Length: 173
Image 1 (spheres, rainbow, N blue to C red):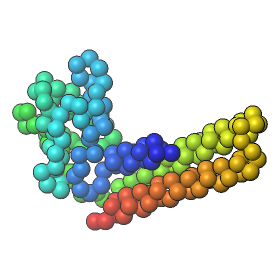
Image 2 (image 1 turned 180 degrees about the vertical axis):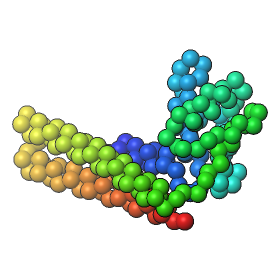
Image 3 (image 1 turned 180 degrees about the horizontal axis):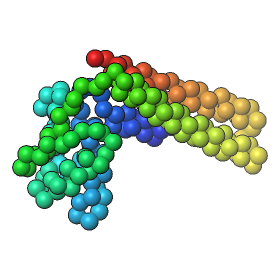
Image 4 (image 1 turned 90 degrees about the vertical axis):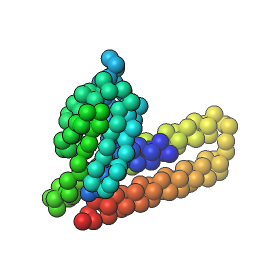
């Protein structure tokens, strides 16, 4: 369940809001050195101000590969290559784009909830197997089911909280 929450946080981090954040590009996959690597493994990513992301590759030979990965991503931002640096100016979002992004993060949150339900189903199946094998009593089974549902509800609440925070961030002009 913790992994499902981490997945949702990572997905939300990749959604562009009106302000610059290193999370926008940290998990971009770049084809460098003959393999696919995360951008954070190839460069230092900073935000000098609220409207700019600056990428400074550790190896100058990867600048073109990083630029290409950014252009092919769903970010919709054109990178500006300045010698050894890549700058990403973050334009303000239109109202229509904000609403589209809210729908998109809603889908991401639902994917997290589906993952939680899968974990819950697996845990319930395991406790039922233990009960059938005679390792736990029926009372233990019932209390385990309640505890599993309690944890599921707790993590669902955490996803809802993350969603509400991200929606607020997106809709703020």
